[in-house]
Picture (cartoon, rainbow over the protein chains, first blue to last red):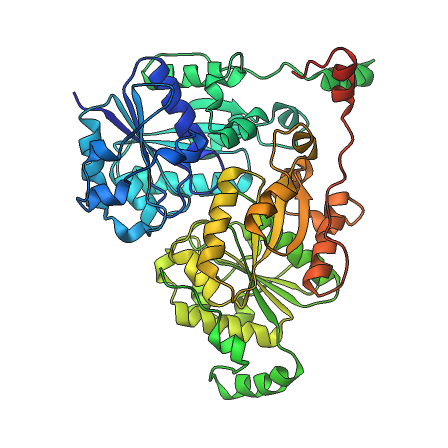
Length: 263
Length: 298
């Protein structure tokens, strides 16, 4: 049976596509799935850094496309999970070094030996985005609760649904305390605008910055709440109905302030 | 990829040929002033290019300079939202490039700053519809009328980036203190070469994380990039709020971040003021409390 081929994209940059790809990939691998992550951001690759695998790169995506090596030679096995591997992007080439049909056939090949192929799309809607989408038969759109990110997500959703591929949404970097104070759009607001199926809500967590810099997906840390959230996302991907986490537990300071106001 | 070249027409100060009355206006303007065309770019997305463009433009206009902001992110425009001008956009960049609208028709006057104007990107078009030579010519013409032409580049290093850079003669690169952003900026600086004299703004620094060793410091970032530093902006929730509301934080000069943008503008203008740095933020109330009760952080 062939793998599910899912592109992770957003339009706007910096909303967390690469972090989401790495963490979702690690979570699925932890659950015993065979997972291949493909970095489609030719020229500005970063997925290798987020997984701490940058020193192990020998071959890359473009070299596979050009037939200079086999796919299995270019795949880098993760340090922590045997069933997780990445195909890195070329760093010194351009996005048009590979065509959508070449990209799609590499994804097809990867899909033969995996349960999930996750494609980390570059920002924007240019050639790199078109390549990344060409290889997928489903999409996860990542957005943050900001007007500009939502506008870009809406544009990308239009483009992908025109290609007839199912789309699910992850709302990333939610700050519940800002939603409560009316300074940030709520998940409901975001879903109203985009009206696609919600796959997950991920709170803004400072630990992400540090784990990403260290090349350790945050879900692998002990006791981090994001681990549980990614597990739920993975289960929803598998078709399970899993209730969404609510974030109404206030911070100490928030509770103090609330007590002062009401008291 | 070939190394990118600064705009030849603005560098030489020669105006491209246009209609007689425009030529006349140019002849008088060209001698009077020559604006600076500066591209804001980063490689990585979401590091704050658009926010920086809006705030730097606002701060420069507050200093009395005439400023035009060009949104070069065709298909994914956002600068209009950040300035709160989205409902006032009538014509866009491609209308001007394809001569369906004049520059004056397309420029949107800012709500808050008298000398600030926006040239919006087309939303339903593609980046490969922009002709590089026409973009260069447009930036040259704008340089005759404005003191500053700030070009907000799209993320990435594809055609949209190349067109944004094509018209510029200087570059400001924006980087966040993250390994991935530093790597992307380093790549962009390589692509730009030396001729754009790239200067650096470090954005979204969280001093308390740097103190705890959980975030790269200014020295870590610039130890790798080694660029002239214009300034450092702290990560403040206010930025999200003001961006959603369409009111750049630089309008609030009494805030630390607003003041930092004004210091950056002064440095861009050539004033010898120190690069703004976020205060070595004092421990928060919660941090002090938790330190008091035994150092548990979460």
